[in-house]
Amino acid sequence: MSSRDLGGWWAALAGIVAAGAGLALAELVAAFVDPASSPVLALGGAFIDVVPPWLKDFAVEWFGTADKAVLLASMGAVLAAGAALAGWLERRVPPSGAVLLGAVGLVLALVAMNRPGATAAWMLPSVIGVGAAVVLLRLLVARVPARRADPAAAAPATTAPAATAPVPDGAASRRTFLAWSGIAAAGAVVAVVASRAVSAGSRAVEVVREAIRLPAPASPAPPVPPGADLEVPGAEPYISPNDNFYRIDTALRVPAVDPAEWSLRVTGLVDEPFELTWDELLELPMTEHHVTLACVSNPVGGDLIGNALWLGYPIRELLARARPQAGADMVLSTSVDGWTAGTPLEILTDPDRESLLAIGMNGEPLPEQHGFPARLVVPGLYGYVSATKWVTELKVTRFADDEGYWTPRGWSARGPVKLQSRIDVPRSGSVDAGEVVVAGVAWAQHIGIDAVEVSVDAGPWQPAQLAETVGPDTWRQWRYVWDAPVGGHTIAVRAIGADGQVQTSDEAPPAPDGATGWHTVGVSVD
Ligand SMILES: Nc1nc2c(c(=O)[nH]1)N[C@H]1C(S)=C(S)[C@@H](COP(=O)(O)O)O[C@H]1N2
Ligand SMILES: [Mo]
Image (cartoon, rainbow, N blue to C red; front, side, top):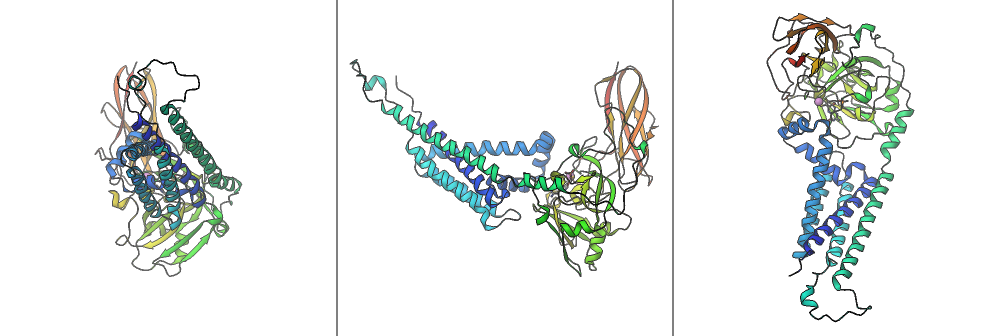
């Protein structure tokens, strides 16, 4: 009976402990350099940027807005497996494990240095963290417990050991190894806790945000007519509350932008480029406007859409001050995290369209995840070509010369919101026979909804009752009272725009420029 050699497993554990401690130290260094320089965030961000569109769609479809948590968990699993491999290799063929860790560290440093807004210092977390991991790996692997002696071979005689007999080698080395690993793990925990304390920046920004008193609008929004919300139980409210407003962006960590350090630069093909600080912005006369924001990735019947009251300064005024040159036809807006959107210049300069550099959302400063301190909101366009959060630059340019973030990733350069309607209730399952309230929303952004129609079991289209609305830039609620007979039924909805357009039944997926088709719901009536 021969004992099993567990050294490979111990070495793998050593790899995980060393890499974990190194990453923790890297987080601590990153907290001082810049939170976004964390190797984990930098690698995750780079991954999001290069991921092929089909994989991104797959992730959003399967994990929805939890896609980032899934990405971080998968990265953790891959890093742990790689670290275990490095430990195992280091014991087998030293120093191959250390070389592997070093190579990964080099890649992480390069990735971090190439993130938007990065400086050379962004390599420090990776370099210092991986340096520590390499030293730890060598220390720990050198202390991996020796192969346990085969008791049959080592102790053939049955002489009773003295009470003071030395502890066998295996147990001693195991204890040393565990002690070293324990110290490394404890150090890692301390580093992570400390990095949290140092990078309290985001909490500091939240404190600044909560202290902000928004200026009163020089041009207030018309009041929401009482009849805009039909208040059908289960249907979405006319105004989406901020904490329930959908969130879509590529940021693994919500950028924490201190308004005191924020500014907006208006650059490019303009006669008068200028920079606007937060204090200067607050002095400007603000406009209030209700706009329904829609995501191009929203499938038919989906919930990546929300309606809010925005407070901001008209983008057309900013552009008028900069004076765009002839030939320009696009504004490329850039976020602090490097994300960009390309918006037609003529839409942003249109006197009849309230495109805002927004600072307020439903009466509060923009929530951090919705773009604090400032973002763009443009009626009629999908968010991916217009709604830049944490915006810091408007570059006047040409579609022929520049493109927004999603355009080279398979999405259309232009993104007007398509005519759509959605059934909110009943959603599925069963309802009682008799009068059933069917209700939902419809939108024809910047055009307006003229009618909504409902069809049961492919029968004739029946007009639904339309709620009131503040104007063509928001969705409109509707309801239809259906006398439901017992059995299984399919309800379909379609909208008709103020321009006479009837919502098409042609089914198109979200990519490249927005989903089409009718939303249908199957219900069983008991
Ligand atoms: N900086 C930044 N702004 C962004 C995005 C992004 O990824 N980064 N995504 C856009 C997209 S695709 C949409 S639909 C809207 C969503 O805005 P919300 O998260 O406030 O709902 O933000 C837009 N602005
Ligand atoms: Mo979007």
